[in-house]
Every structure is written in C-alpha cells, then in structure tokens.
Length: 230
Length: 400
Image 1: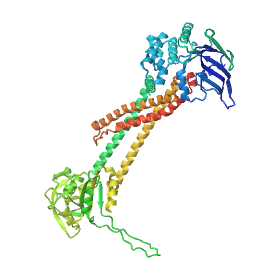
Image 2: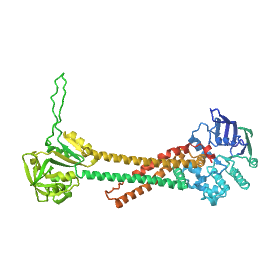
Image 3: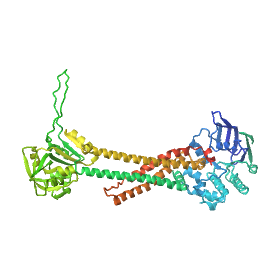
Image 4: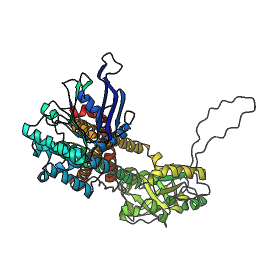
C-alpha cells in the first residue's frame, strides 16, 4: 500500500441533518477512512446506516458538517460550488443503481457528456476514447442508440463507460448491480475489475449484495454511522 | 456555451409536443402584437397624412396684443381688472426678414407667407362668409399641393383670378369663368374671376377658402405690403412642436405647431398608442408566463436528469444557461413564426380588407419584435432556470 498515493482520505467526518433545529440528527459520527490508488473496496451496511450519505459526501455532492475530506490530497470542505463541480467532474466517476442516462442523448453522447461539460465540443481524441470505451463494454454497435432503445444491462454498461471517460481517480458505484439479473450483474462486476486493473482507478462500491462485496479486495462495514470493520 | 446549447436543444426536441404547444402560443401572441402595431401605425400615419395634407406644420403669427398697464407707484398696491384686447388683423413685423431666416432654418422644408382675413362673397342676392387667403403660389404649393386637388379650371391666382372651394362654388352657383364679388367689410371691395375650383375633402376649407394673389388680398384687407401668417412645413412632423418653440424664441412671434392646434387629434393618437401598447404589454406578459410555466414543468420533469448532469460536472452556471437558452429559443422561434403570421395578416388586410387605408410594412418591426420576444424568453426562463441551477444534486438524483 505504501507505494500507492491516497485518492481519498476522510478525517473525522460528521454529517447532521436539520442542523440547529430540534429535529437535528447526526447520521455519520466521525468517519475516518482511506482509499488508495487502484483500491477495489466495497462499502456495506444495513439500510439506514448512512451509506448513501457517505457516498454523497465522497462524491462531493454534499458537504460534511464537520471533519475534512481530502480528494487527491485537496481539502474540499471550504470549496465553492464551481471548484467542487470541476474537481468532481475531473476526478470522480459515478455509476448509479438506475443507470441514470440522459434520455435525449445517444449512448455515445452520454458517454462523452463529462468531457463535453468540461471542454465543450469533443475533439477527435475524445471521440476515439468514447468509441473505445463503448467497444470495451461491448456496445460498439449501439453508439447512436438512445437509452430507451437499450436493455437495462446495456444502459448500465453505457453508464460505466461514461463514468470512466474522464479517467477518474475514483469511481463510485451505488448499488451498481442492484437492478440487474445475476448474469448481467456478474458481467458488470467483471467490467469493473477489468477497468480497475487497466486504468488503476480506485473503486468504491456500495452494495447490499454479499457476493459482490466478497469479491472485492477490501470491505468497509458501516453500522449506525460508524465504520465498524475495515 | 456549446454544450449548454446542445443540451438545451436536445431537451426542447425531446419535449416535442410541449415545445410545439408553447411555440404556437408565442407565435399567436407575437402575431397579434405585430399586426396590431402595424395596423395602428398605419392608421395613425393615414390620419396624420390626411390632417397635415391640408394644413401647415407650423403657423407663425403676430403675438397677441395685450393691455399695457402703468406700473403702480412705489408703496402702493394696485388692483387691475382688465378685459382682453380685441385682436385686430395685423401684419407680422419685418416678415421678409423672418422668411429669410426661416428659409435657412434647419429642418424647415417650406415657408410660405400668407395674408388671411375674413370677407363676404356675394353673388347676386346670395351671401357667404369666406376666408380670404392671399398666397405666393410657388411657395404655398410646397405647403399644400393644391393643384393636385383642383376639380375644375386650374390653380391660378393673380390678375383678378381666384380659386375657391367646391362647396362654396356650389352654394353660390359658381363655375369656372364666373365673377364673384368679395367684400372685406372695409371701404374696398373687388370682383374676381373664378379660375379654378378645388376640393380638399375638408368641409371647412371647401366651403370657405378663397385663394387670391398675395397683393390683391393685401389691398382687400387693407394690409398693404403685410402678411398675417407664415406657414411652415418641417422634415419630421413629430418634432414640429420643438421647431415651433425654437422659432418662437428666435423671432418673438407667436409660433404654433400642428400638435397644438390639433390637441384633440394628438390626444386621440396618444390614447390610441397607449391602448396598443397596453394590449402588446399584456399579450407579452401572458406569453412570458406561458414560457415560464412550461419551463417550470420541464425543470420538474427533468429533476433527475438535472441531478445526473450536476453529478457529472455541470456547474450551476451551466445549468442556468441551459434553461435560459431554452427560453431564448422559445422566444426567437415563436416570434419568427408569429412575425410571419403577423405579416400575413397585414398582407391580407391590405389585399382583402375594407381598403380604408394601407398598412405600410415597416422593416424594423419584425427584428424589434423578435429581439423583444427573445429577451422576454430569457427573462421568463430566469426563475425556472434558477431553480434548476439550485437543485441539490443529492435530492435530484433520487427524485422519481
């Protein structure tokens, strides 16, 4: 581990909702964790343990109430929206349970979206990268199809290609196989593994599925807002 | 901007029926605005042209005579009860010099000295009160091109010739070549030969005006060498009041623009403009609310997609622009269609309408309408766009 640099470091992260109100609830009670380059980690825990909250914080979609979150060594708590958005766009890829593709765009456009948002019209290199990624997830024939013309598994593979287009340092997946049948789920997991090895990007998978978490290199267990097992 | 534009257009295209409906709404609104504006502009131009076709833009006269009051002695208070002095027919002092100055005046296109006064026209037993108008033909023609309105004979004054209105000719049973006796109430009277009959279409003028040579009118009205009125036309009729005020200050004479002498007309025109503007404003407002509500619905419908786009690196500013662009596209496309429809209505009015007057088609109306509609679109999109930009991505992504 020592020769790999940190991708993500959490220091005493706390998160409360309804701060200052009688209904204030602390969901995360001081999380410390570390994800290094090319780690392949599962985050498990029962419903209501704060997994999604933690994932939102790590994905810079939300801010912690206290503590500090370092992404690629940069402290993020005090960043403004533009800086967080830019860091998120460049260093984090998301894969959601429900594929979450933009219906108005083709598979290729969906994959290129993070690049287009950051740099505008895609150049030839970007287009080649998009095509290559879609080929790697086995969808080279579906480049110009709209999401509603693809099956659930195909859509999830487009979403994975999209998450990887920026060569992110960290890929966050929230129940990525939760909505897929066993066979397709296994395919998707295999893809994750392949990209993990190929690009060296760290994976953090939130899952309920013990088969999935067992196949990961490391498992973090979250119970009642605390990491109980690293 | 490229990606914002792209997302906006894709969103619009995806919500095809919504887009089509609001576009029709905007188009109807814009066509109403374009048509009503063109109609009222045409109508007003027509009214003004008819009014100013028979009168000068500015009339210059001697200032009114006023009572001169001996000032009160120091330390005493004076109460004055005065009657307004009767205004007698007087010549404008140094009118030749005034005309010379006016000829060189900026914005003034024509200047015509006139002697005008009351008289009786008598033929046999019948008597009509008339207005004598002594003119210099060449100069007067530039103010009112009477020769276009001659219905018989020709426009010729001088050497005992006179031109009279059609109604006057009918009332006195006169024809070209007949004689008419003019009596100005003074000792002098003269008999003139009817050289022509005009019809301006204004009752007052057609039944009362008798055009004479300047010199003959001067002698009839006992104003040898004098003129009572100087008629002026200006380049921009709506600046007539400003020009009139300047002339008044410069010459010390009473200078009245057509706007002052036609206050009723001006009132009518300005209330007409006001009501047109009100209609346009309210139509524009309802169009704006239409755009705002369609985009608001679209923001709700796309909440999850907005969340995903934010997660993938769309900044708040970019998200704001995506929806502002949609508003602008609505405004632009809707107004393009609406302007064409408005033009079609104008065309139909001109071709198939009652033919009361012609609506001129202004080349600036459509670009202005489209620009305003586009700006309106952007402004109406502001609230939904702000809401889209401020959506919390965490909440938005989970929105079902």
